[in-house]
Length: 265
Image 1 (tube, rainbow, N blue to C red):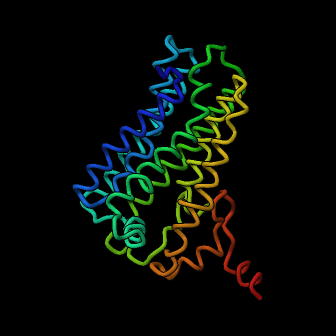
Image 2 (tube, one colour; image 1 turned 30 degrees about the horizontal axis):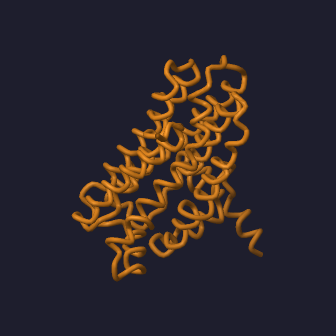
């Protein structure tokens, strides 16, 4: 009988993925997998917590932080996508994998995201399972989490308010957190997963560094910044100027138009 909590977490995640896939076939829309993404991590955290009873102070803190992050992100994405057609990214994937996308989506969408989430969730296992006392690394980890949550939740809130205005079509949000980085929400996610790694480091879990490295790769090169900016300039012409004036990922001072023109000359 399988008893290792990390393997149990994978099995539960894949079971939820398969059930969600069946629903997507009925709906003919796989977009809601985005709402599931953060919940996969919550599933892993709950499995680890149940296997580690009683939980230490660190275990309780990490479980609480994962719950807050996961539910906030899932609720936000669900509300944002409610009543909308299938996301253009998935429409493209669907078009490139016909015929048979309904079956293929089981592994190229739901299965893949479930496995990726399971791999990224690795630091949660030692962080939640360890019974050692809190130390100074936990304080640094909590600070990283707080900064990340402010950028992610704050960036999402500012973007949703911006899009709520009727005249936002074709315009670019360049105020608030978006003044300092073109992707405050992705930067926030980056900080949050490095924070969970630090919670793991606090109990000797250096070996889980593959998790934040993988998440950083996804955010920067695969499904985050790189994918979004492939098409956004076509949809928002002023985004090209925004690119020149604003850091792509890590927050920093905004460059003036004079600095931009001087660099181009």
